[in-house]
Length: 335
Ligand SMILES: Cc1cc2nc3c(=O)[nH]c(=O)nc-3n(C[C@H](O)[C@H](O)[C@H](O)COP(=O)(O)O)c2cc1C
Image (cartoon, rainbow, N blue to C red):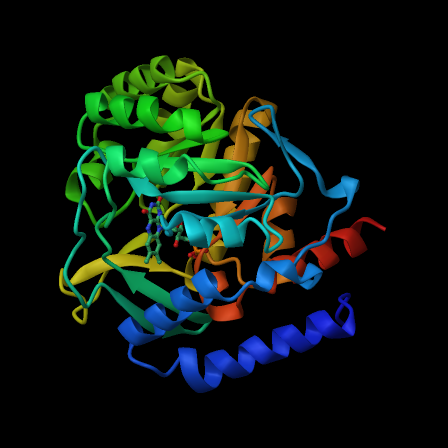
């Protein structure tokens, strides 16, 4: 039984039909272009329908107040899309991981759909397509923060992370460092070098006073628990995003492997969040990311001990109405 008003349920049905008939059937490149065109051009954020404001939903993340605990996960860098997403019910919005120099990303095919027993997902080998630090600073300068903005950073050395963080932090409310994308060897391999990661965290911590989030990989559960998260806490970084996509072989992609996202990674994510909460208690704030595509999956992530929860694939498969559906369910659960 839905807890949302009829207009919200109608928007949910509309997107399900659109995904079944069009977005889920068009060749991926075309579907992505169409979806991004819609987010850029259609002023759907002017409809109050997508949001729900209620003081009971607010959370503090690294001392920054979010109007609710739902976060758009890292993928978009276009400020027009980020601006729109800020009006679509999210409590914070994350930019793509930005690198010092512009990157074209991996050639297509770099995103493919995948059907799993748990529901529809994606496998991507995007490879950090982004305009680079200088251009992105200029792009973010005019972006109003209707809700907090999390700026994403990645790099191949501690110096590069620190430089990107120093350059982007003034434009964000929080900073997220990505040490977990499986599509760029040097980023993914941070988790195999825990000693160097400690130096990376110290350099990033020195580069900004903003709260810092470390985004970890579900492929390195043991290392996350025994080395990465303790090193983050030692460096004064108290928020972990658990986590990124899971590395899988995928012959349809140009790189023949990529990051699996969507509901197939949700159960393991819940387990990781519970374990982190048990092990580190209240010293750690946790963002739960991985396969959240329904109110039930979002509530499960928060019940597992997450401070906030984030999704990207759910925006594609369930549409922008998902945040509102989750907010309605959250408030209903608290009554
Ligand atoms: C096409 C695509 C591009 C992504 N780019 C980034 C990125 O630049 N930085 C990052 O930290 N995560 C990136 N992600 C990972 C998502 O932010 C998220 O952590 C992951 O997809 C798992 O969540 P989900 O199942 O809700 O999608 C990307 C995911 C996809 C599908």
